[in-house]
Image 1 (cartoon, one colour):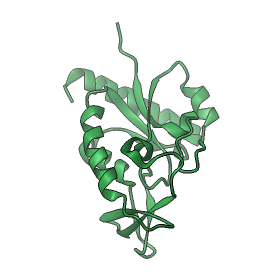
Image 2: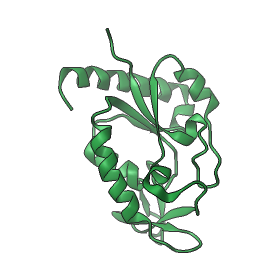
Image 3: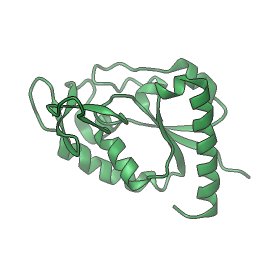
Image 4: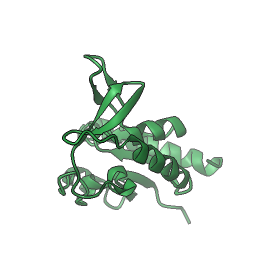
Length: 173
C-alpha cells in the first residue's frame, strides 16, 4: 500500500484562525486543488511556540544574516522562543514523512523572503522557521501561497513533491 503524499502547510492557509489578529488567510483555490491529492499537516510557528492567538504583530529587524523577531508596538524580542521551538519542531518534522512545505508569504516566521527592517533596500531574509527548515532540509520543496497561485508553478511544485516522496522512500531522511 502506497503511503499518502504529506505536505506541511501554514495553518492559516487552510482556514485555521492562527494569525496574529485571530483570523486566517484560507487559500480556497489551493485547498480545492490539493483536496484528495495530498495529506496536509498544518503548522503555525508563532502559535505553536507559545506566542498566543491573537498576538502582537511582529517583524524581522537587524541584519539579514541574523534577523531578530521583534514585536512592533512593545518592542519585545521573540527570537529565542521562535528559535528554540524551531529546533524542536525540525526534529519531529523529519520523522513525519513530509515531502514539501507550503508557507505563508511574507510572514516573519514562515516567509521565504521577508523584509528585514533597518537593513536597507537589500534587507531580506527567510522567516525564522523557514530559515531553519531550509538549512536542515535543503532539498525539501518549499513554496508560498503567492507562488502557487500560478498554475504552472503549482504543477511544478507537485512534480517536485512527488520526486521528493520517491527519493524519501529510497533513502532514509
